[in-house]
Image 1: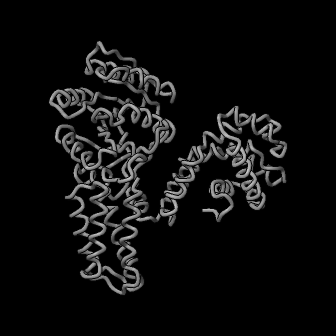
Image 2: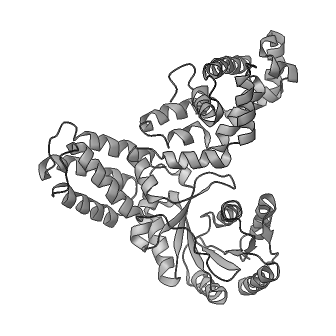
Image 3: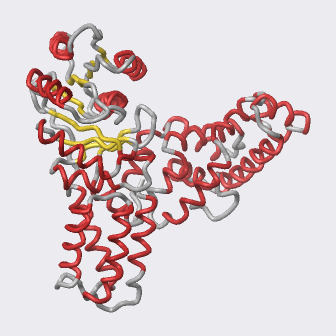
Length: 454
């Protein structure tokens, strides 16, 4: 997300390099470039104009300090105004009510409400230690109820069974009673969507809202709909008392216009952002961190939090002890590292959050596209335990067998073995410190093929 915007805004800010002061003349071209970048990112025109007016007013005013260069001063102003556009401070869910706290999800068909319901349930279960129950009031879309039931089972969440023969209102009332009986802390209600806004959809969801009196009414919107996302959210907000927005499929949108528009157009905060298909791929929306990423300054805090949540600490500790004792870094360890990196969104997902490497992300993506991580795991899984522990025994005939077993070519196996050798050397150089830092450095170097680690 924001790939194109980050690249163009960074380029625009670079135009001020060497300037001693900020004035209307020397920021005019930079603002024009930023304006075009925002419009190309599908940000609503009204949001773009308001943002640029505020930046211009501050940039030519008295806020530029002697301790900063012109470009640094301008960057500071743009960063602060971006944070304001995105909502200022992060806002989580308000669950301080008598249980069960009801969360109602609304949105158009295809926005990702059902998947978001499951992701939100996982978030509340793992981060907030809540007992969660889910129910589907979508009696129109084929297999909508079964989809949510499957996701609930996969995530270990409570599920209230419903039927397409019942009305959405009856399902909601039944689920609320079940949540009370089973002492659920939170009830998440997935509602039906339509391909477009219509009176029937609005009347139905208004009735559900009145019956459930939810503490949170979240509008779920697909990031890839761009500027339309904000307009649709506003239309829903005119009918429902929305408390927040969830932006989905953000990883599939390189523009980012939805996130930059929806807060200003609706007046409601973005509370969560979905980036990835995994059931845990939901993040609390932090305006300051998103602004930092747009400006190419990275998002180290999110990377650290991600590492703390998703890296298997037991495996990391075991590996550190193994290396400290001088034992070899074998292909089983290599496979674990691949899995750990996948859990954190892959190499490019990590690069996007590191400061100063936005321009390197495209090159990294190209390498990742050429080399499928699932393919690497398949090759390692096609080896015998002895081959994984002692890769040097893998001869020509063994390579042919591994390639056939994993559906790859011999040159793919050779490439895997070469990368393993490079990472093995890196691990030996990591010294005695061990722990998370070593693992992170190892991950970064794995795809770097002997070059300077990212």
